[in-house]
Length: 326
Image 1 (cartoon, rainbow, N blue to C red):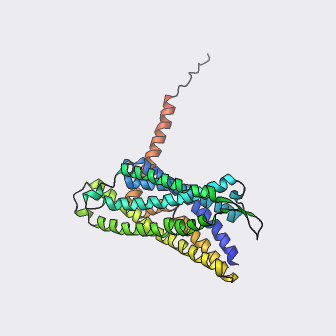
Image 2 (cartoon, one colour):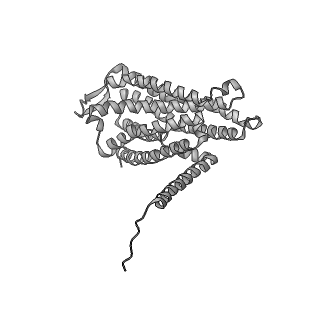
Image 3 (cartoon, rainbow, N blue to C red):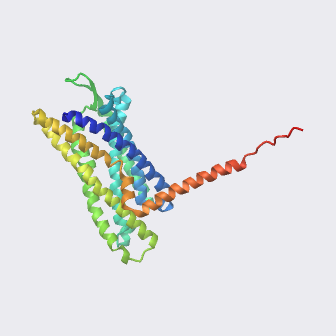
């Protein structure tokens, strides 16, 4: 069995599994965060809710296209210029926004658990709304570069059209700044740094005179987000590092065996990369007993509410009286 065939099989089944559990998990995140007042009033939970929305967008515009290309040899981006530009744009936008939300959530928890009241004031739902509007506008304007620089290019080897960034300086900007910095080592460094500080803060939170509900919420959210940060290091750093190495080797290496091994490693690390966008719900369930209780409460509450609506509909129906024949 060749590495190429093995990599294709891993990519097909791994990507499909990641897509299914990701869409289900992110949808459940949104339901839980939007259903409970505790989360609706939390700036950190607002960032996590927004991150769940953009993660779903990343899975649909990034991963499902990869599944179609790898598993069924169908590249939608070569069939429509509109989809070609939209996929490149939305794919990068969702990735940047997701890491932005993770950074803001971790920094927000550092502010929320800080012993300095001045820093605590920065952890506020209104500030979170303003920051999210600001970054949405900034990254939307940033995506204009991709709309005007993406086009079809005919490969000299295969003779098939490919949807890529045609301008050389934009491609370098995307690789060296966006891929390696904005969605690479920068969010990893920021989140780990503020995560360690926030974790140190919650170790001393029991000795502070703050309301019990807020204390438990801060401990819960800090644990959830910091665990996700650590998982992000495992899923993101190998992909970024291998991307940098493979680009260098592809430009210089001529050994077919080396290139095949690099391609196989790239497939595996790409699956790891996409798991970041799909497993946050399962991380929260595993590390937070309080989140598990909240999740089951939301499910039971929604189920009871739906049953009551159905019962009210049945009770309010007017049935005709059938006359008895003599």
